[in-house]
Image (cartoon, rainbow, N blue to C red; front, side):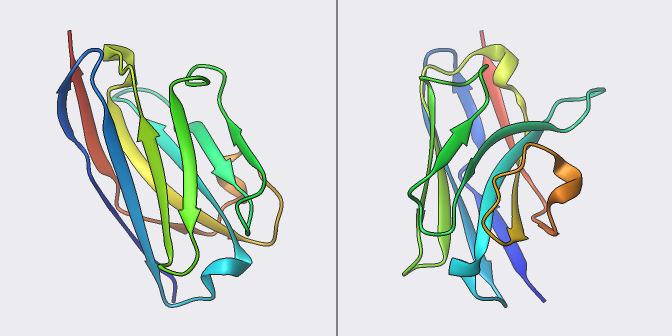
Length: 124
């Protein structure tokens, strides 16, 4: 069974930065497309970014483009989300997720494995 564990969340002031990490175990990491989603209270889970199996293709949501970067280290079975110029509207629980295959999907229903999430709070 694939397990995903996020870390790196916390409280930061607007304009600040955070780097989220996700450690994967129990599967063949380089066979997974990886992604980050987020969910704010009372809202649906929202796509943030995705990265292909070997890291050569990435896609990030328009709301975070130019501020967030997704990357991975297949040797360490980890995926990262570098978040810069954070805004209060970025406040949410951030989830790491994985799917078998090499298609970058923007839909949460297409992902097979999920972490428990890490809280990011941006104060104004």
